[in-house]
Amino acid sequence: MTKNPPQFADMNERSREVFRRVVEGYIETGAPVGSRTLTRTLTEQVSAATIRNVMQDLEHLGLLDSPHISAGRIPTQLGLRMFVDGILEVGDLTAPDRQTIDKTFDNDKEDVTTLLDRVGSALSGMTHGASLVLTPKQEAPIKHIEFVSLSRERALVVLVFADGRVENRLFTPPQGQTPSSMREAANFLNAIAEGHTLSELGAVITREINARRQEIDRLAAELVESGFATWDNADESNERLIVRGRGNLLSEHESEADLERVRTLFDDLERKRDIAQFLELAEGGDGVRIFIGSENKLFSLSGSSLVVSPYMNANQKIIGAVGVIGPTRLNYGRIVPIVNYTAQLVGKMIADRS
Image (cartoon, rainbow, N blue to C red):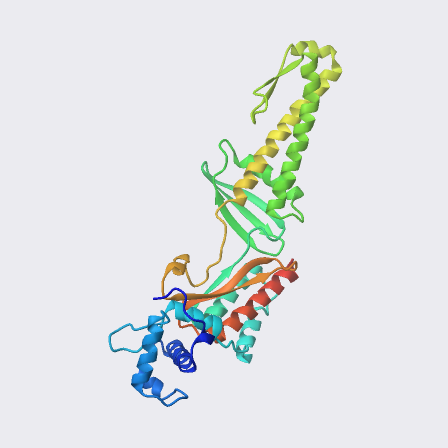
């Protein structure tokens, strides 16, 4: 078997027609196509023996296969790829298919997750295949965030997005965190979340941490220089400022005030570090991908095909995809426009809601 079969255009007219008829017959019936069947459909009147010779040549090229001795031929994966890339004529979306897809988006009051469920169900019903709907993480701004402690080693973050999506993600919280500390982290994040995506919130927290760190360094430098304090574990995440002769500060009101300010800043810094860690764990938690009607293992199975089309947001950025998974003999000519049109409507819906 050659790894580089000839292009369809490089084959002679008889070979092209035999190849096309075999693939089309297989897609329609799922059964091998024999030489006697082709003698009744070919444009050129030739014998079954001649057709068998052509089919043997196509088999030698790796484009056709014979599942059983004396049986007809079916296209190989390589043959199907050449058919889809070079021969397939994609039809226009039919009026009934368009109406079915349009009805899926009729209820604009439903949240995005529910609508995407309906999209998947519609695709499955129309194509008799398994539908696939991939939604992006963190694309829409956060509307509300909540941390729920489930146990010492398990917690749940509930993310409500501005486009109506709700995601639940499980994560392992940092050691020593309590339900009250989680509520405090959520309250802080909700206060600054408006208009920010999850990843943007991380950048905001990082700026806050850097600002606190710089202020601590400036105030602490004066105290260390005056001999009132010294650093312990300097440059480490658990650094401390050890005060010497605290009683001597009673007459140094300015130093006492600076020390209190450093203590407050340290508390704030640690709180924001905890929040940043919560956010990082939430962002990397077990996220939500919607596979409707199928499981991920389907992609590794031989004999299956996936027709998929990406959809974009208002900024023309690819943020997800919809598709159909089925046997290799999918009706590609009909399914391709169905998937493409559905992807366009999903993208428009996401853009309108954001």
